[in-house]
Image (cartoon, rainbow, N blue to C red; front, side):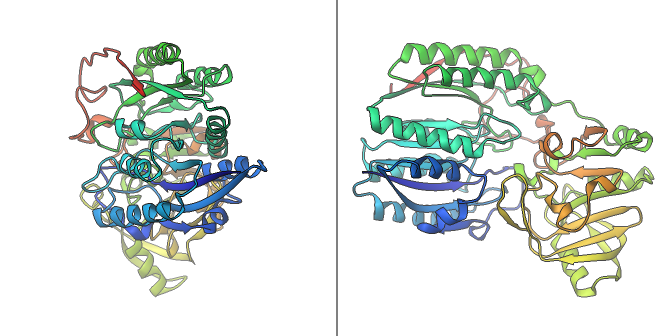
Length: 494
């Protein structure tokens, strides 16, 4: 029997979100609770478990899981506690382990430790020793660091954006781990770091040019490589090794891995300008919405909680008021103080509330307006995008003239329709829907006649030069002019 350990530690952060992530933001699952949390969910862990449990010669040992919504930099004490609990659980189950599957994101960041995944993998390697294979799953927005590479055996990376292959990625990681155990394969990883950060609709893998690069990676996997990927990093996680990078893993064939990684990197670099987001001014978008016959969506990617933003932007709301927009508009907003006042007043109450900027007032000065409390809720719903149960704290539906606000207390993924539907509001009933997610439009709001990615402030704006990166390597496209790419391939093990 092969004894396979399962670990999980997943979060993505924006370094530009002023609100730090706390320990309480994480859902912790120890032992069998890790299986229970993922059994019916659309997650990498679910995909890996399905593969392992299909084998009669595999014993699955669920060890520890920690998963949090995207947010700001993780507090140092919170990371120490999570790391301590995870590694203590791993030590307890390490004896006799034949392999470790570790579900990671790749774009975590903590105070005092800007490479949390590298720290955890290095510690896990120290516990398990040099011979136990460690295979990870990673988000294609992950920042694969040198320390991570040194301490993992191989990895499987998402092949879709917007992400639709969580289960498939976990399954690929599990199959890769089992292949290594069954055959004695010796993975060789080649990667090429590319000084480019990208954001925009050309990254949609079904329709954009990035999708063709990903399809090439999938062809490589179908034709003998152990794994291949094109990681684009998370441009909002300002850490030393932030970049894009091609990755090819073969069974001992370093020459092939290097050749294909270099080719993939060259293709990506050639198309970098296309992968720079076209943004529409808020005024132009509102004018177009005013004339539209069908419903339109405004994508507020700058304040996307799923990418690490605070979610309390009132920039679009302010613009609609200033431009006198008269259509029916609906939007979510994180605003715990407004929710508490609404709950205290009750349904039907009319209040003067300061809306927005409860977390990031420097970017979003609060906007005082009269609202009617139309509905109150507990903030619990199941996300369409993952099947996981979300907890946004207490909620309130606030009506201000022609505008409906779904106010929530805590930042959660707003990457689908669930925040609207859970409060009895069908987006189809509105003329303008604000989506706080860069990728949700194509998957859940394609009924709209047009989508505008608006140029507004936020911790996850696609207008990357405005963010103020201070830590990542420079020069970096598009933060700097005239960036030169001199391809260099790294091989691990060297």
